[in-house]
Length: 429
Image (tube, rainbow, N blue to C red; front, side, top):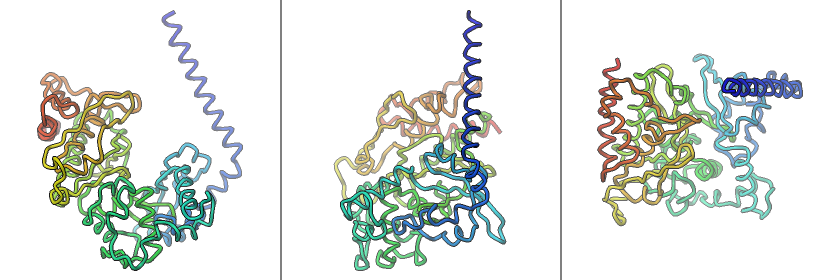
């Protein structure tokens, strides 16, 4: 009987695999015409496919010439439109080519699901006409996205506060930085909003409200050492960013030395985003193995999903002195039965100078025994070598970083953990 049960499950598993293969084969047969058409046509040169026809209700036009010239094309599987049903996040891999530089891999994002994009269209129409469907281009000129016309000098906090995580508590210094570094205009470099064309202003505000990830990448660029993917450009509702490498999850069972190096880099990212010379604290609200990637050559860890990031201006907090602003804030550990759980208050993150949120997020969701992802538990530093496990220091620091027992224990544990990971990394070489 004991041997019969696993055999039964084994047969069931094989049957399910067979059904899946047969199902995919049927779908392929039903889509044969579309299949051949997909390989023959570069849909990224189609204005309607990339929603260029919806501008200025879009994310930009700086890369449109490259798209229209056929310099950007989907990789093999990305050309199969029937697979879009599995691509809920609308993220694609593509090849971008320059005559003198050859081709390289890029990542294309629609910045939302099909439903989310349809919802924003409906909201624009309802605000402008009261109806869910309308002429989107005309409607844009009757919304708050067009309210800031050429007479408005600056983008100010009172206009956009709360539109998205990036501007949950915006300072004038942050908004000036966003406008000055806006990449979807030929005349970037000025913080004056009036220097942008009407369509460019609407595109900036649309991006800020729908998904501010492109603005995070532009305002805190990788070229200046920020741990984000490089922003390349946009056309319609398709944004292009640099391909970083495989997602962090691919390294879950990598050799111990490699995982120690990645863990140290993750803690360094938490530190950099919390404490930097610019006095901007960037708090990661969505921390999971899918939101980080690792470079194939340099092994560098990069944040590849920057939609849910609260940016707090520490200089403004010190200036305004809200209640308890100078009291260190400790994030509360809460166990839950879901993956990548975090407990936080955006208002608190915006009103304290010293916050341990990023250490908490990385330790709990990526490194410690509390981390769960795709049915696996134990975190990136699972199953350490016998001598490390016997010593017990790593487990103690990880526990204190995720679920501190002492007051302000996470701050100290994070510092010691970074030092200890450096020590372990040197020993693993």
